[in-house]
Length: 150
Image 1: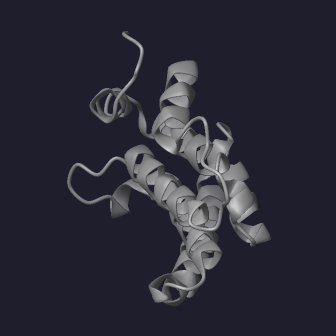
Image 2: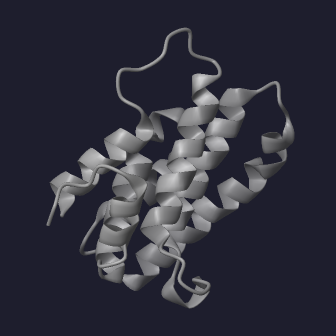
């Protein structure tokens, strides 16, 4: 497989993965921005997403915890004055995306891709509060994660 260096390649690669592999790599994307989240339940849910041996009950509980926090923080997302609160919301949304049960996936939705996009949103919100830019953007970090994982 050629090295992933753009979103098209990333999406193509993610679409070849099993449901468990999508969950784990989506969890890796979320973990990369976890420092922007203020909720321990979301952090524990992300750890569950990364666990290849997690059982159905643990996965369902983790999804519900991340989804509940993302829903709770959704109203903060409309405020344009608290970028870090918005980043917090998108981290939870990334974790929830990675953990989305197969029965709740619509159409061709790929949970790893959705987690990647939500993680990017979290990072974009946090960048509004940062003084300096970064050497490597979130998409490039995701390409690196995918290249290391696949």
